[in-house]
Length: 435
Image 1 (tube, rainbow, N blue to C red):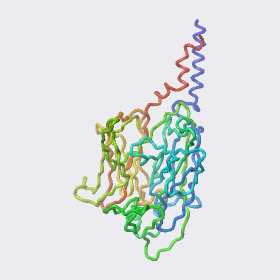
Image 2 (image 1 turned 90 degrees about the vertical axis):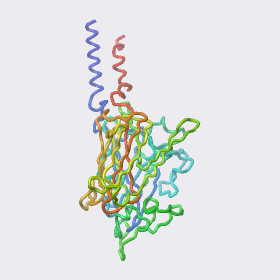
Image 3 (image 1 turned 45 degrees about the horizontal axis):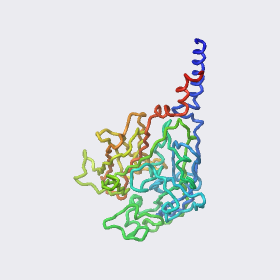
Image 4 (image 1 turned 180 degrees about the vertical axis):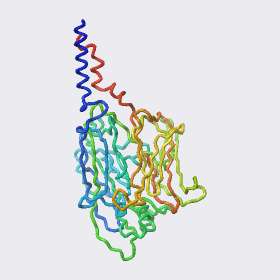
């Protein structure tokens, strides 16, 4: 009996050594298991003052059942050199997932009518919380992209390519929307980046519909092929730019803990309605808003600031793994509060002080991120959170600004995931091995 017990202990120790070697650790992958690839978007040609707001489909992206660990992007020229924001302003880039019938051939070129609105394609959006497909992307940032961390800590990851989630007869594909504004020679660079309608001489949106009364600037005035006003007599060459994006991922296994992607919008106004299925909440994310110039209503600690807030219920909660805000020029910081007033995450804007790419003066070149210790920050199911977005209005107002907040949330902690993994059965069945 004693010999048998020793054999069981030695066997258990051997299994432990196999299970917890560095290359197969339950709490993270070794670096040599992380795959990485660098991709380029299709070419975009821009002249001084011109705008590109392009949608490209079936872009290069990791295939198979994997967990994305990071996604970084920047604008580069034909030679691969980073393009500074004071020459080409990256208003935003977003990458979305969709399902397409296998028999359909995708045209990867620009589709001004946005293919995702077609009936034979299905948007595979994130976990919410805006209406329909609004802000449904998986990845995306703006001018801050070079200086904002996107790494997802082990053992967490964004699950993609799960064959059980892809509808029969469909395949998973990815699209990118790139909104870039060439400000070389612009009469008012900041006005161009904030899409002031008068600088673009725009009175109708891209569909030919008149702008709403009082609309001074924003996405409806700097759509694809519009032109911002240049300094008199300025001439400059056209040039080609690309979005260069780097993706890191690992193969999916039972030791990766999946995270859900939530994007909250400070412009969201939730309307509660009754229906036959009970009480429903109808979100209304407007994506952009204006910051009025300084007034006594917005003075806080001798600073001229504009504060916008909204409170929204999180139907499903979990443990916060990562958080970051997205703001435009003039942004100071954004904070997400829990129902009890605790700070879930605060993300602060970082401005450059030079001319080189990644450190452009007066531009947001990074947003601080939150990486809570696993399990330390939890949002309860149904908890109402408050999103606050703060902008400066010291010198001028701002149009078309954004106040978004990206959250990665895990429904369970690593040790909980481990208990339900395949390998944990070794421990559960250890006493039965020699029966």
